[in-house]
Length: 266
Image (cartoon, rainbow, N blue to C red):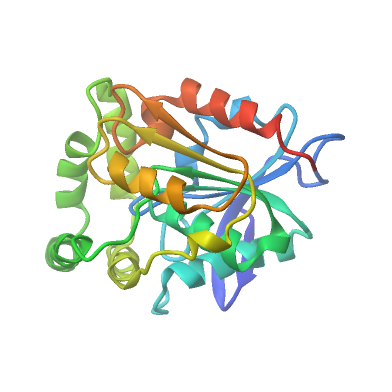
C-alpha cells in the first residue's frame, strides 16, 4: 500500500494517475471528514478520473493512516494536504473536502492560495461554540466504549430520507474502521476550530449541501458562501440528502464536481 511521510506522519493515499494528470486535465486532492477515510470519495471518482488526476488520502489517525499521539488541528490537516502535494510533486490542485475536510479546504484556499486552483466543500462545517458539547460527548463515548456506539447511531442519524440500507452499511464500516484515539483527536480538532478567513478565499468555490443535513446545516453553508470572496462561487443543494453526500447521492455529486471542473482553467 502506498504511504507518504508528511510532517512526521505516515499517510496512506491513492493516486489515479501517478504519472501526472491527463493532457488538459486537472489534479484533485480529496480530504475526508471525521469518522471516514479516503474511501468516502470512491463512489464519485468515476466521474473525474477519465479526464483528471485524483489523489485521495487518509488523514492522520484515520483509516489506514496510523495515530501516533500527535495532536492535530484544522491547520495541521491543511498542512498535511499541502505536504502530500509536495511529495507527489503537484504544484496546484483542486481541493475537495467533506465535513471537517470542507472546513479545511477553506483554510487551504485562504492560507495557500498559490496551491489552490479551486475548492469544493461538501457539507462544510462552519465552526461555532454550539459544536463543542457534541464533540466533548463523542470523545467520552469513544474513550470508554470504542467506535461501535458511533457506528450504531451515526449512519441513521446523519443521513437523509433517501439513504438506503446499503449506503448506511458503508458508512457504518467507515466508522468501525477508525482508531478511537485518532477519532478523539479529530474531535478535539473540531472543538478547537475557528472560522477560516473566508474573506481571503479568492479561488473558484463550490459548496455542495444536503437539504436534510443536520451536521452541517444550510444556514452555515449559506454563511460560508456569503463570506467567501471568490467571484465564482456557487451553492448546490441536494434534496433528500443528509451529511454523507458522496455516498447518499454519488451520481449527483460526481456530476456536479465534473461540471465544475469544466469551468476551471489549469
